[in-house]
Length: 365
Image (cartoon, rainbow, N blue to C red; front, side, top):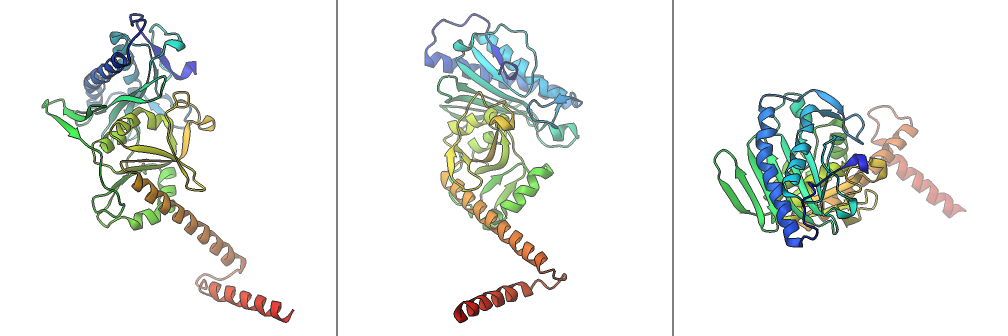
C-alpha cells in the first residue's frame, strides 16, 4: 500500500509514548488541522479556486479529482511533523509530500482524510456546503481517537473526542459543547432524519427502488436528507441526523468521518444485501484506499445513532427487495402471456384458472 498512504514523522518522536500522550498529540493535530483548514482551504474556496479536474480519484474510475482536493493532505502532514508522531495518512490522492518516512512497525496512528468533501457540486458552481474531514485511529487496535469536520462554507469546526462533541464558529469564537447523538428509536418519529447520497443517478435510482417501503414507513414530517459522505458523521454525532444508508459505499468516504460518530456512541454496520444480516463495521487501514474488488467498498452500509433504527431500515429494505422480486415475476408472466397493454387484470384470473385445472387434473388422476 505504499502508493496509497503517506507515512509521516519528523524523527523527533519519543522512543516510547504512553497511550495518553499518543491520544493527546493526535487530538492536538486534529484541532490544529481544523483551524488551518478554514483559512487554507476555505479561503481559496471562497475565491473559486481549484475547480479544474487534474486527475481521477485513486481506485474510483470515472470520478474526477479537482485541484482543491489536493490542498488538505499536505496541511495535515505538516501538523503531524510539528507534533512529532509516527503516523500514516491515507486520503484520496497520491500526492508526493517530501517528509521523512517512519518504519511501518513504528506507526502509532492512522489518519484518514477526505480533504474536500462535496467537490463535485463545488466544481459545478452549486451552493452545496463543502467540508474537510479527518479522523485519527489507534494503529494497533483500530479504535477511534478523535475526528474533526470543517464546514468550510459556514466556517464551523466540529470536533469529537472521548470528552465529547463540540462545534466552534471561527468568526464569532462561540463554542457549543455537550452535543449528543439522537435518541430517536423509531423511523415513524416525526423528527426522524435519514440521509443517503442521492445526487448521482446511480445512487438515487437504486435507493428509491429498494427503500420505497422505508420512505412509506417514515412519518409524513420525516426528512430524507439527500446528501452524504465523510461529513455526515459530524451531523450524526451532533444529533441532526439519525441514520445514513448507502449501497456500494467506498471506505474512503466512511473512514475520514466515522470516528466522530463512534466517539459519540453511534454504530455502523456492514449488511449482507441478500439476507439482511448485519455485522459491526470495522475500520481497517489496509482497506481504506483499496479498490472495490479488494474490499474497498461496502455493498450495504448503515450508520446509526440508535441500533433499533438500523434494524427497522433493514426490515424495510428486505420488504423492498421482496416487492421488486414480485414485480419482476408479474412482469415476466405478463410478457409470457403476451397480453395487450391494459389487460393486466387478467393475470390473477389466469393464475387461479391454472391452479384449479391442476387440482382437477390431480383429482381425476
